[in-house]
Amino acid sequence: MDIFLQQIINGLVLGSMYALVALGYTMVYGIIGLINFAHGEVLMVGAMTSWSVITLMQDAMPGSPGWLLLIIAMLIAFVVCAVLNFTIEKVAYRPLRNAPRLAPLITAIGMSLLLQTLAMIIWKPNPKPFPSVLPREPIEIGGAVISVTQIFILAATAVTLAGLLYLVNKTKMGRAMRATAENPKVAGLMGIKPDSIISLTFIIGAVLAALAGIMWALNYGTVQHFMGFMPGLKAFTAAVFGGIGNLGGAVVGGLALGLIESIGAGYLGALTGGVLGSQYSDIFAFVVLIIVLTLRPSGLMGERVADRA
Image 1 (cartoon, rainbow, N blue to C red):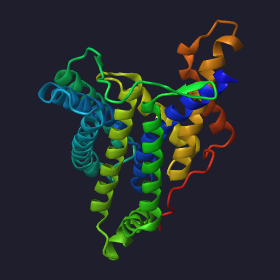
Image 2 (image 1 turned 60 degrees about the horizontal axis):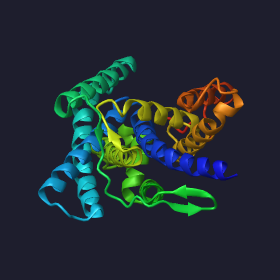
Image 3 (image 1 turned 135 degrees about the vertical axis):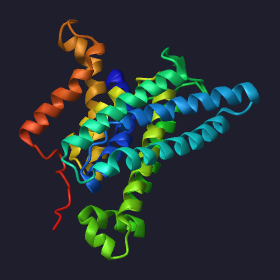
Image 4 (image 1 turned 90 degrees about the vertical axis):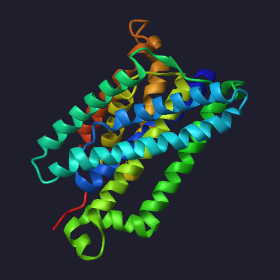
């Protein structure tokens, strides 16, 4: 039971990070029907930027509180990733908005490889330990342990998701986003600027990805130039799993995928007689996706894409 509870905690933490990235995928897809495969690399840039900021500040201001360094690093990473994603949308995606769907898809993959290469040049290819800025003492809960970092991840994710759902469903900006998703031309006639709304969507997605990247670095303690590939791929899987274009589906898909992967990794060795270990946990994400798409192609909560007139 202790092991099961521990895997539940680990799964919720992992799923929270998947959910944040999946929301970025599903928001962009819901508005312009594009899968931004460079989204995982935005996560990586957020993590690498925060690593650079914290490292520099620790050298410049030794003895500074860890939480202060983390907040400053997060704010700077948010700005850097927002500018990056805004530029990507304006330079790489906007000129191809009315092109055949294959063109922006190939561009997104190319942008992903470009960002990986640039990150390797800027930060060098070797993995780097992420500074420990939060207390390390674990807290015991019913035989399982949870760290301060994991509590921070769960709390920050819950607040962020609640704020995003409120923004999209209850505010004037959210109505403008939904109207743009419904029909950009009609939205423009009603006084909405579709290009500005699409850019805002990319900026929000970038902030979510940067937050997830910092959480990933805090949780696993290391950063490197290709660290965004697998979280980005699994978050896309989570978005499809829950229902692409559906914000609630992205959250449910991310949490479900994290729990499945964590519980599967904890019991995989016992179930296979030691043939497969926890290092094969990645297979669960894609096996589950295949099963779900076979039985329910629209995802668990249904695909939500506007019917344009």
